[in-house]
Every structure is written in structure tokens, then in C-alpha cells.
Length: 201
Image 1 (cartoon, rainbow, N blue to C red):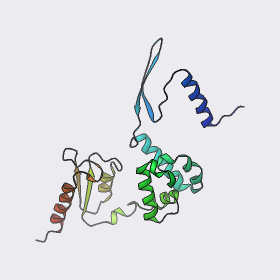
Image 2 (spheres, rainbow, N blue to C red; image 1 turned 180 degrees about the vertical axis):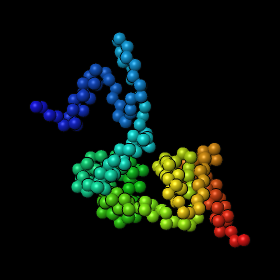
Image 3 (cartoon, rainbow, N blue to C red; image 1 turned 120 degrees about the vertical axis):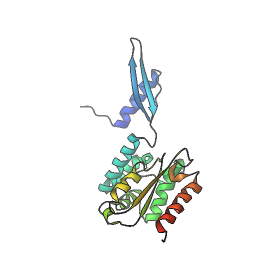
Image 4 (tube, rainbow, N blue to C red; image 1 turned 90 degrees about the vertical axis):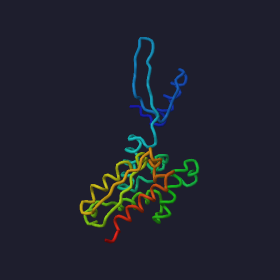
């Protein structure tokens, strides 16, 4: 039996493909395929960092590292670009990852990126949401990239609290993460809610 490592197999296939004039594109997925007698046409699409495929993979890897700390030095270091572990020396090459993860390590007092993931596991409303009874304003952005659907989940979980879910939109210039570009509108929404909620007869 002859066994090749995945990395070696990919290197061999890449060499053959390039010799035959193929263009290799990483980070894409096949969306369609048309076969003709003399050729095959493949339709591809770029996989966004916020696509369901990437989000699912990130979630899986995060779960593995939280539950299997020993994997941190093996799996996580090899998959640094998936925001599971990203060496500080390379953070500048991926500013979003470097900023968020390094700041998270500092804020949580974590010893490593894997340790950060394990610490954040405890930050959940699961098992406590029904004990919240205070009026709650939940802000959502129409074009949210990072926490799509989370505001709606929070609203459903707060079964004993009066909630107000506000979705600010692209049309208002407030559809991006944290309503960037429309902070005046976001703040006015919050203050209006406070006025209504804290109003004294």
C-alpha cells in the first residue's frame, strides 16, 4: 500500500494541472459544470470569509479546540488563517484576525489563542436568559457580517423580558456592522428607546 500525505498529493496534482495549462484558484467553490464533447466548462464563485462554508468550518474548528486542548498545537497552528490560531508575528498579514484575536487574548487574560476560545465558551445566555426581566433593546444591522441572526435568537431567548428589536438598514446608511457610517442614527435610536423606557409618568 502506497500512502501520500495530503500536502504532497496536492503538490503533485498542482504540478500536473499547471503543466496542462490549468488555472488553479484557491478559495473558490464550483457552482456549475457544463460538459461538451471537446471541453468542460466549470463555473466558480469566490468563497467569502463570511460565507456559510467558512462560518461552518470556523465553528467546527473552534469547537474542536475548545473540547480538545491538545489539538491546539497541531490542528490550530496549521489552520491559522481560519482565525482559530494566528501567530502574533504574522498578525499584520491578516489585520482583522490580528486585531480581534490579539485584543481578545489581552481582554480575557488568555494564555494563548486556543485558551481564548475555551474562555469565550462560558459567555452564553444559555440557561440564564429566562432570568432576565429588565427591558432590553436589541440592535441589529441589515447587512451584519459577523453575527447574522444572533439578535433574533437573543429576542427569542428573553422570554421574560420586554424586548425591542430594531434593525437599521442599508437604505438608512446604517446596515453595516455596529452601524458604521450612521452612528448618529444608531445613538438617536438608543436614546429614544431610553426616553420611552425610563419615562416617568
